[in-house]
Image (cartoon, rainbow, N blue to C red; front, top):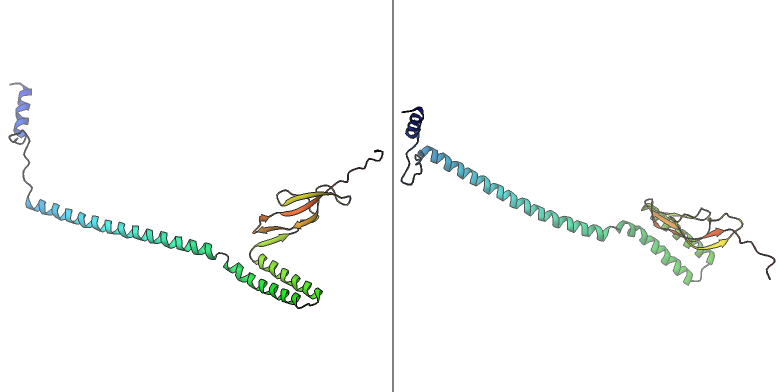
Amino acid sequence: MGEQEKENIETEEAAPEKGEEGISATPPLPEAELKRLSECLAEKTREAEANYDKFLRICADLENYKKRTEKEKTELISFSNERLLRELIPVVDNLERAIEHIEEGSDFSAIKDGIRLVLDNLLVVLKKFGVEQISALGAKFDPVKHEAVNQEESSEHGPGVVIKEFHKCYYLNNRLIRPAMVVISKFPEKSTEGES
């Protein structure tokens, strides 16, 4: 016999016995090993159930969080101007008092002074909330801050200077919320004297 045949015989002797279908039969597991695997499976099943329970709780918490934030967002939108409105209510009261004085036939200078006080009060309230009123009179025309509705000839001002103001411009926390409506100056047109 050659070397090759010897190795084949040794390999066949070392190989496990094969059943009728040619599949090698594995020896049955000892009871201790079965018990250990059974306990391990039970532990992993409990762990999986605990993780699934945690997952369900987290999903429920997430849904509750979404509902709560949606409710808070709705309330925030609904009541976001509450502080401003509380401050404006006394201004409305003062305007109502001014109207009562007008109906009683009071002195017009006193009414004018009262309305001036109400306006000053309103501007103070707006300033508390970041609203600033800026006059454009005498300023150089700026298309970002000013809306020109007309041009008028002016010998006193150079071209493009604001000479009249219909509405002042307003800023909210340094952001323009309404441009000023203005009239700007232009050079007077030269008259042509020899026209017939």
